[in-house]
Length: 323
Image 1 (cartoon, rainbow, N blue to C red):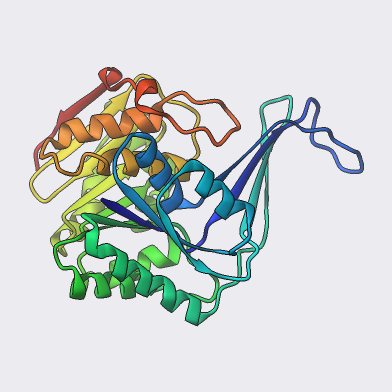
Image 2: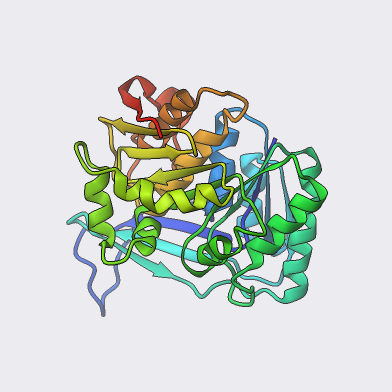
C-alpha cells in the first residue's frame, strides 16, 4: 500500500469563459468542474484509478465539499479535523486559451494539528510500503516539518520507503538534513534543479533535457543527493521528458505525446505512475509507464486524470545511460 500525506489540500475548480477575462463585468462560466487536489491527494487519485492500494491523509473540515468529494471517489483516507476552509484554486480559461488562476489564502492550521498529522502518518505507515510527502507546507509549519516526519518514519518503520515531492524552502530543508535523514526518493522539477545550479536558470535545465542536450548538468546537480544517501531521484522535465537517477545508472525517457500540463501536476502524475509498480525491479519499464501517465491526453481545463486505458507506454522511448 502507498500512503500519501498532503499538509495543504486544495479544492481545484475549473471554468471556461467565451471572451477575454476583463474586470467590471459579469462573466458567465461554462464547463465548470471541481476535484480534490493537493500533491499527495492527486498522487492517491491516480494510483487508486489504476487499481493499486493507496491511502490518503490530509487535514480537512468534518463538513466540507473536499471531504465529500474524496468520499464519493471512494479513495481510502483519514483526515485530521480542522476548522478550514480548504484552500480553493480556481482556474479560468478564456477564449484565447490563456488560463488565469485565482488562489485563496492557505488553510490555517495550528501546531497541534500538524502534530496530529505527523502522528497519524506514522500510525498508518504500519501497513505501507511507501509514504509520499507532497506539496507546500502550511504557513505555521517549520520548513523542516518533512524532515521531522521522515525522522519519525525511520525510527518506527525503517523498511518503509519515503518519497518527497516539494519545492522551495521545504525541499532545501530536506537537502540540508541529508546527513541525518535519508529519503528513498526525491521528485524534482526543472525549477528545483535550477535552484541547485548557480547561474543556470530554468531554461538552461530544460535545454539540457532536450533531445541532444547536455544531461551532465542534471547529473552533476543530483549526484551530491545520491552520495548523501538518497536512493533515487526522479526528475520531471518539459512535457514529454523524465529522468531517473541512482548511484549506478541514469535513465531518460521521452514521449511523443506530451500534453500541456503544468510542472507541479506533471511531477505528481509522474511520481504516481512510477510508484504504483514499486515492487518491480524494472526501472526502465516503471519510468516508461510513469511518463505515459504524465503525458496522457486528458480534457484540458478539468480535474480529469488518466486511467490505464488512456496511457500509451509504447509511445515512450526509455534509454539507460549508465553512471
